[in-house]
Length: 272
Image 1 (cartoon, helix red, strand yellow):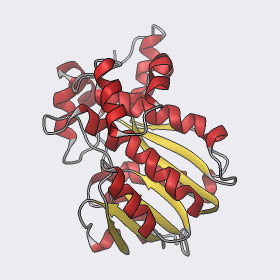
Image 2 (cartoon, one colour; image 1 turned 90 degrees about the vertical axis):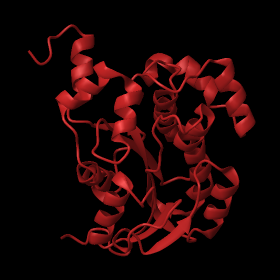
Image 3 (cartoon, helix red, strand yellow; image 1 turned 135 degrees about the vertical axis):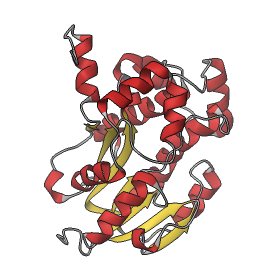
């Protein structure tokens, strides 16, 4: 296998399972030195170094950022949680957006020139442009109390795919932040992109299918379920030198789900 990432050092969040584990393992196979950030230690095949952290806790993020290597070539924000009964709306928003933003803002200065930041988004965040006025409000909070107060005021709920459903909202926020990074990123020579998946065969797939409803679950099943390695391959390309001219983009890696949604929106018959 190509050693395209030899002498490169990457931080991968969520490296203990799912897409994060598949990505970390692939990077190591291609010669990278991988620093895993996660709540639990990953398999040795997925990391050279482990830093324990909780993306839902600002203090834990601060501590992990201080332990990070002085220089890195990429930050892969893959850790995230699904909508389920064991998680509050505020905690989901914290893990899936605010924690990512806080970690990235602390680590960006450690990125070498030409370094890449990759955010793990979702097809569920596809309609971020339509909700941009609401999303701009949610860019403001910087503390858990502020996040909680705004979520309560706007009536954010756990389940579903509406504008105020927690998981889609978190991914829409991530998309908007990724797009605005071209002008907001303070360190020159560093780029940020996102990849957006649909159904992926991980241990949390069932949570998504339950939360999004029967119609959405059927649509995901009809498109097909990706493997974590399918997504990892796309991520590896997005942090490679070959994608250096792709900046502030959200790349769909969803088996055509985005194309199907666009076709239906414009009145084309899909799947018949």
